[in-house]
Image: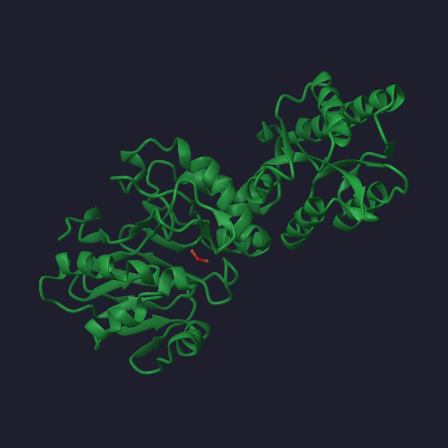
Length: 405
Ligand code: FEO
């Protein structure tokens, strides 16, 4: 038996909290858990917007039953097909066999592909509407935010946006649902981490979606993960806007691999040089220790990036190779970049890190520092100089863009 939170008149939050799963998508740690958000609109017709991950289907069913009091669900609106939001579809359909599944052409292809369902479906397209009685839903296609079928649903009388993954974040909802009712401290960094890891590759589609909805004055934004945004809509949209333009804040991430501390010594010297020239946000990550999702979060957050690696088996340190693959996968743009390498008998890491910056088309400091065995005094000073130069690059860009502070 549940008592659901009513986020607007006759619109109920019926989502669930997952404090069990270790890794989202079997890759990304969930230290604060994650919520799978689902919303029920009880009008002359009843619409369920998205479902939840299959393990929590029974909770969703009980939450829905608490509001329906014997009525049926008329429509299931699928904004996003990924199984964390459609996993309970077949369970719900068994209970409500007359429920019509509403989605766009690509959604319905996936409904068939994943669940073998092709009857009782309604195909909708950009700008089409569906009346529930007092409330009307309008559909906006937002492909690649973050799958090709993704769309957003706007409730038009109050401008309540059901946004799918967009504007979402990791972190369970601990008692509250609306941002007005909770301390939001844990969510902001989790929003950066969610963005960088889940939708980071899709900056351009997110920009298109933001432009499409730019003239709507939202009352609420209801994402599929994290709080319902009411007081913090401008902040949330601002974070997504900035991240999807790949605009970093003033600060530098130093990610380094180091087996015996010699490459780490270079990283320390670069950090000194950054601080000497006024960079206060210096974030250091040992790639063998920091979780990649956290490193990516900070790379998306800050404008400057330094990568350092020893040579290992005539290649980069394996954890550094893995990080480069993750950065490239997300096509991270517009970074101010510096790099350094070390080796004991045959150096290759410095060359590879330089080539990586070229491939990513980053603005790169032209100082190439390669250390043989242990750090010499000259190389120590060169690393400080590298930090000085990168700091100047980052600060010069931030002078032109005051919003990066
Ligand atoms: Fe939360 Fe792209 O699914």
